[in-house]
Length: 256
Image 1 (tube, rainbow, N blue to C red):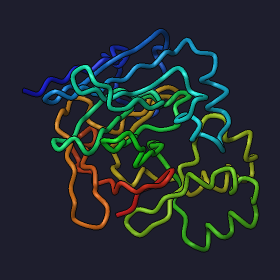
Image 2: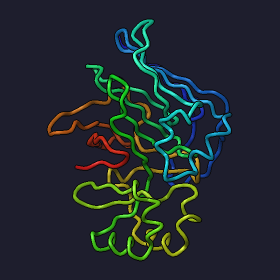
Image 3: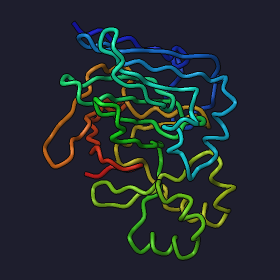
């Protein structure tokens, strides 16, 4: 028997409208779990922690959300009374265990002070894939990427982990809270002129600062495909479009 219990009650009745206003804040402790067979995948996040904001604003070290610096949020996998692993994590709103228990997936609609909206762990607790997802990103040609790096080297270094390729094109997920002031107006305008819908699907949307709607929150059946060297996670977008995300063992990005 498969039992799934979702937990982010904050998301109830929020409209999935592009660029909508933020109607509710975060607060308190949020927990949730999903159970398959004897395995339980659980998440806990405490929004009262004063460490969240400064950890997020250290943009070049977001990997610290998976370190001991994060004592406010975690996932854990247990087999009955036996704990298989516990890992620090970003804020998650949807949990999934693959049928073979080789992949543990956390999805998130939380954007505020949250560096990753997709995290995949292996069954032994190793982080296989982590990715920040925005509704809109910059698409750059190879020449434009070289130009950006040459004209704005500090900005390019700051955003180095935010580049990814998809469908043969180069993208930069640059629209993070705090980035405009840190990269400077000219670099921001360069990227703004190249902004497109996220290549995964054109129906992603965001509130001003707090939420990003990029997957069908009502769906319960994700899947894993193994057609190549790396497995792919299959997710449905808010309007049901099929998204295949290659799970690469890297800080950011996906390819197809």
